[in-house]
Length: 499
Image (cartoon, rainbow, N blue to C red; front, side, top):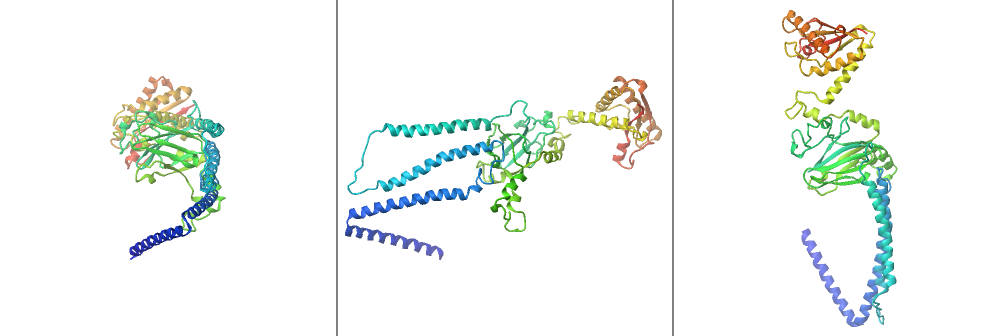
């Protein structure tokens, strides 16, 4: 029924239009063609001028009305160090193009009125005007030269890469349909190498080369968290199609191109909370973020910086949004301490691990620091019961006094500590669990203590500073009723006898 009504309305409009045209024809015959043409010209020219005035007023008023929701104006000042220069360049460009826009429209519509057809008026033609050509050539040249030169300076400053030795944080963003893989460096502050041929969605989504130890501490967070006032260099790439790394509030925008890594360096200058506080001053941001929950957080409280893809990369394009948090340095360090290396949590000691069964350089360094800390703590203790160090990384082959290869790092570190503290005399105590015969366990513990002593002597430690003693199964530190407890009881313990 509704469709029929709409069709009838269109038919009626067509009939009215036809009738009006017939009335116009009759009026022309009555009044004369020339008079009708003159009235049409005057009427058209008049309404064109009216349209011009209304259109220009609309442009100015609407721009002023919506300025607080546009980047660069109101609360949306740039939150990065370089963003202010870009906003300034846009404003200067808008100033000159705005002048041209207004003058062009005034000329277009005013000339329609001024030079409409009138009886007795003839057009004047002239072939050439050097003065006019100079004016409309020189003025644009001056304006364009200024804009290009200023833009070039700003571009070079904005797109500059890091200077050698410049303090910065480097992260990586890899776009794909339809998400981002983010990668941060670990304690070494260096991102490891990648090879697309190593990509495996099960355990290596980015194709990290695990033989490069810089990859060992890299981690893959689900959000971008950055410290304020810290320069950041973002490596940008893509796995499949063209994407775009866009941080609108920081004036960062760079294509992510498969096979062609790009980058952008910027310095965030406002934390997320500081930006929220600036939004709080505007009434339109003091409304509920969720209209269905009027008692919930307001818009300014729910604001977050965001990472978006600014390319139409597919139907799921919208889902590439990621939250970006800018925080103070202390909060960033706390967040950093909670992150886990992708390699250590997903690859370590699996079949994909090239270091399976061995120790990493970082692990060796950490064990060295740990042993030195424990030794000095025991050395400085006034309580004899605390003057002990559990050599946690000394291991023997099952049922044997033969040292495992992994033990050499711990014992080599211990020999260096003994060389540093030349007057210290220690006892090396061997301990076992309670599995098997007690007398056999006693002999095994003594043999293991002697093996440790022999290794240290071969490393240059004076034999007179070392005593070896076996305790068998008589001094457990944990419950022998569990596998974990028995493992803790099978240990080599160092006791400081004299300083």
